[in-house]
Length: 79
Image (cartoon, rainbow, N blue to C red):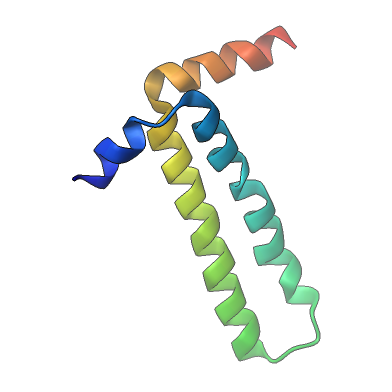
């Protein structure tokens, strides 16, 4: 089965949860630069966490689709 079709069958709530998981991954990917470890390890950690953030971002957007993004926009405009 195609991964995109599998993701598109998931619910709106799942899409929002997965999309929100990209925020901590972005924070960790840049905050780990302050750790007292070697430059090579910092690079590896950045690639891993930034890659996870992008995966969560695009996966969540695929699950939400166009209608889900419109729902989120109206939700945030009301607040």
